[in-house]
Image (cartoon, rainbow, N blue to C red):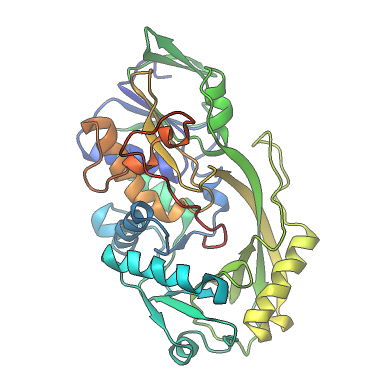
Length: 397
């Protein structure tokens, strides 16, 4: 086992692997990634892997747009395959969300994103068989789609290894050693590893891991459910990805004529998970029936669909549904990358780049991630540059 490393990344999901690759690509050496199980075994492996850019704040919109270009050109930019499939992406909004949706699109267009409001006639060409009469605003992103979440993490890890990163699997980190206000080591299941720098990207384990050292984070771990339905043979084989704010569901096509569907809102309360290692990995009958009913309202032919399988995973959320990407005040060498609130996968390429810049240069230059500082949750006086972020809607996953 490695006993010393310049930088240790805790967590082998898509975030940790992207950070590892990007640090190495910027020339950093002596990088060790520790994963408690196998790569992508946490939230990454239970993501629907939607890739779109519909966000309500400039920082996330820019990160999503940057990431979309990487996903679309992954082999050339990173190397390896991420499984990106272009489907286009639609957002459906009702009367209540009409104004907010138009404002979001204007913000996204200002950031250079290829997105627009389209009419029902044009939407019907993109999404034949959809019921659209209740849509007051329809957003279309022609370049968006979905990818392979686990495959993306593995591709980043493979490239990171090629650049000299060491990756140790089934090596859970158990604590930090902090000496004189500085990181000095990570304590693992297999022993002590001395280091001067730690990046915690442990997903659902982040809060409990750092609590051992008295670091309190505003993170909540909840369970989300996804159902897969076999589309009737008469249905279209070329469906777009969808964020349906009216019916409070999101969905995308999957190989084999399947449709993956997740939901939220409408009085549903996600189950809080105390121990990320212990939760049911299967959707409940209630959840399956609920999203199926809502899906059929949008695509009537799906009333004749067949439920095939499903899965449940974990969201690690902040109060404003924006991640924390920051150093920890008072502990030199400790960095956080957590709280992606169920919509992190599509941001992973930008996360890796900006976290690498933050760690190496002290600030991110590709995209300004200062609005994602931990200090925004402080109850005390805010710094002038601490922006109050809006609440990102759960359903626009």
